[in-house]
Amino acid sequence: MKVDTLFRLDGRVALITGSSQGLGKVLSRGLAAAGARVVLNGRDQEKLAKTTEEFRSQGYDAYGYAFDITRKEETDPAIERIEAEVGPIEILVNNAGIQRRAPLHEVSDETWNEVLATNLTGAFIVSRKVAQGMIQRQRGKIIFTCSLMSELGRTTTGPYTAAKGGVRMLIRAMCVDWARYNIQINGIGPGYFITEMTRPLAENPEFNAWLMGRTPARRWGDPEELIGALLLLASDAGNFINGQIIYVDGGILAAL
Ligand code: GCO
Image 1 (cartoon, rainbow, N blue to C red):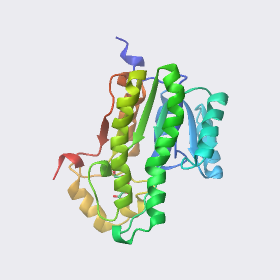
Image 2 (image 1 turned 135 degrees about the vertical axis):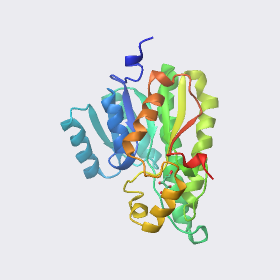
Image 3 (image 1 turned 90 degrees about the vertical axis):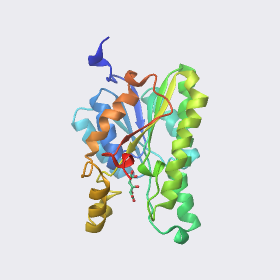
Image 4 (image 1 turned 60 degrees about the vertical axis):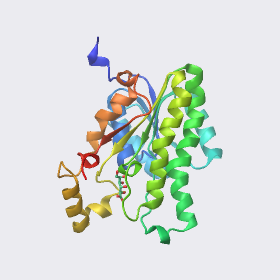
């Protein structure tokens, strides 16, 4: 048993959606450090180019493809271009997501549709296209960035909670349809990590006090603490793990 290479991803092409900033950028750096050829994605061309250049200056094999995962007419051709120009996608991380906080009775149709389109439907659109090649090659890894809201609600996060709950069951739906093709579909469930999405919460003393009491580890996570679970699911180490979510949350889901 060679455990020293079990978590390596040398030469494997990994597409990470929503990766020009936030958790997606950190996850991408973890995959690149394990040897993957990382394909970064975002809607903002300038921000994406800056992050891609940053990765390359750090010696990583990185590429940037700007497309909006909610628009099939952009996503399908972009994935075809990636597979033609970089190589077959062996690892897909469905990370792109948005958060819109408001009491549910004040949520507009537009906000609801925007959150569900990005956090759930967009991930399906990308996965369906990438899975076509994975099914042909009889191998692949699809990993979703889930959330504590895949399991529990928090006030003012209704659309996000509904979408992330849907992601939890989409993982299982893909598992039962695609595991037979040697495709492993799983999720990582981040607790609270300080990113562009959560910074307003981190800067709120009342929220911080609540979170420190609610988290058994009594602290925010460091985004790099997600890399271990990610590499387990993205590498051969996770070849018989399917339909699961690994929570990296400092114990929040273990506590009332
Ligand atoms: C919130 C946050 C959370 C985190 C994360 C927790 O408003 O409570 O945005 O949703 O982003 O998803 O797992």
